[in-house]
Length: 233
Image (cartoon, rainbow, N blue to C red; front, side, top):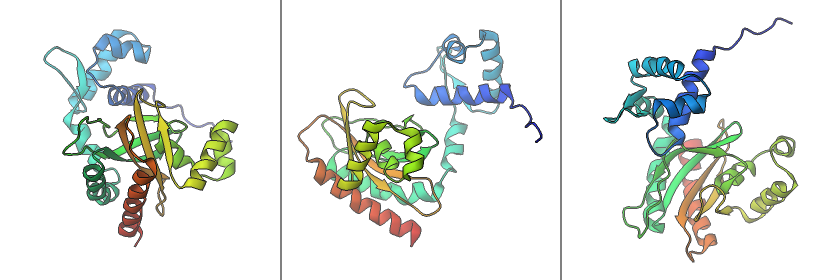
């Protein structure tokens, strides 16, 4: 069998820079990026110059690096129909519950926020930026996504404790989490299975409160049903 051609290390590093910048909440210096990439500063600088030329990253007045406007244009083309259909449902959920609502999708072993909506009125708003990712084995959206997988595939990702938690999600119809991804935050999520797409989840994230999670889940299930009707017919 022929040996596959080697992957491009330069391209891989450039993509990794974009991933790193999408994961953080603040600009990074070139030295910080070089450290995270485990490369010399000069290598990171050359990669950044190329990404800057394509407007994928830009510099702040202080010289730190952030994602560029071109990234937003590229992201808008990803699952455009799914984002467009989800936006009004998420907006309604966010404003009715006064919680940040979002759509998360599976990306291999990660759970990635595709689109999110913050409530117009809330005592404490929680930001959930599109592009934020974490392991699919953590958090309510991750569990809701895992609940859609077959046993063989699931057993490759989850230990016995998580398998039991996923079984509980299937029984209840929704998942919950507290302090699993971000300290002090709670999340409620419901599975979203759409034809021809990776498993997804509709979710809300909020600060600790006495909100009834089953009521939250019921509202999310209505949104999921509406979204399935809109996309699957």
